[in-house]
Image (cartoon, rainbow, N blue to C red; front, side):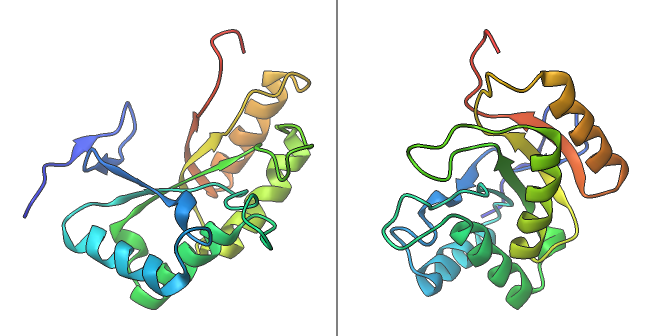
Length: 165
């Protein structure tokens, strides 16, 4: 079954307009089940996977990063990084008492962790996960600009951001 790819916004990313949400990896799905679903997803012609650096911190025994780790192992074992768009997020909480963080230094630290876990040298779409009421948006955008210039991020976006942010 072939699906038509569309241009993702104003980017040069072309995706099938159904994105797999990877928050289940390391939470309700173990690694082998995750690999099976990802294999089936790509075999059916889909090509965009969304995750976050903090998935799945809420599951007992997890600390965050489990989803990215599973996706990275899958990418490495399949050798198909060039066939999928990887979308991940930064700035979310790592516990119920923590707050969103989009400070420039934090973003630059977290991209290194995400790249290592995902076993890739770039992220197709790097997104601010939640509003950060403390950090100025200019600081966040400067960090993203640096990461784009360094080739670590192709495009940036936002998820769960209020209109007033």
